[in-house]
Length: 454
Image (cartoon, rainbow, N blue to C red; front, side, top):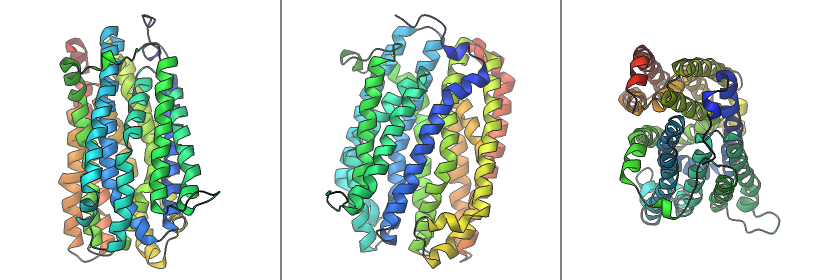
């Protein structure tokens, strides 16, 4: 096999490597975040009910992404570790089994979309317009989600071998298609039918399908460290066990966000549907700050995993420290933006007077949590790369379930909507303290972990 020499993740200077691996993913995720914002801007032009419907659909969409991304974490960590150990047959086995898992994940959500789209919205609201919008939007996103699962699968294979420029191209291409076709399909431009909110969903899945095709073409043409074949996609129990050893905590960790958002929407809807719309807008805006963090984190995980497999402690520590410095810078920029121009940000979404009254203090309060979140995100990446996904899971449980939802509910009993937003910085500070505790524990025992790695 061609990949018998040392991969760049074990030889390139760490700071340069982190930029080399992460920058393409940061750029592509910024484009994705821009798409998320523009998508909601266009949907908001339909009416506020449509914007609220998309906001309420977010927990289910996030759950779909959690399954795809969490599975990708398991595949990515196993592939990178096996590459570091020079066990190339197992690299191929992991890559092919990841395709099998992508197909299984799609079939699961196809069934969910066919049977439960309307039920899902009726669990959250009784407003007919929101239910009607949401049912159409969610059904299209789930029924055609094979594009999303194929895209995540192909991109994680490229990331694990350090070919992040290819993932930048696939993600950017998909996002640009979304951006172009959003207004065309929503408003019926250039002879296309006027599809309304269904057009927003159609543009989304179209972009994902094109990105999936690009991703698999790149894997076949330029990713010489893996070989995909139909025969190789037969499930291997040992490989699946290794993948899901990391994937299950990652899936649960990201799925917790869906549970949190679902219950937060219910708490906010007890005040007004506009509050839920503001919460949805906040998530779109915060993605422009968090997506670069996640992009850097996606680069950090294979670097940590590879160097852990190769036994290079100093490179692991260096990558972690550099990522934390960059993370604090990114999150501070997000904090300052939200504090200085919250009203201007909300007006991008055709905000009504009531939406501004609720949203301006909400954005300023919510953004206080950014810097603390940056450290926690980097910590989670280190945990996953070192095979300690349970720490990442526990971190998310503490932040989003143990602290956030109970605190939000208790603050909602005051009858003051503004008080509810303070639950986010409170929860993030608690998670920050836990992340530091786990990081200190891991660094203290890192030498022993390297000696005992399997």
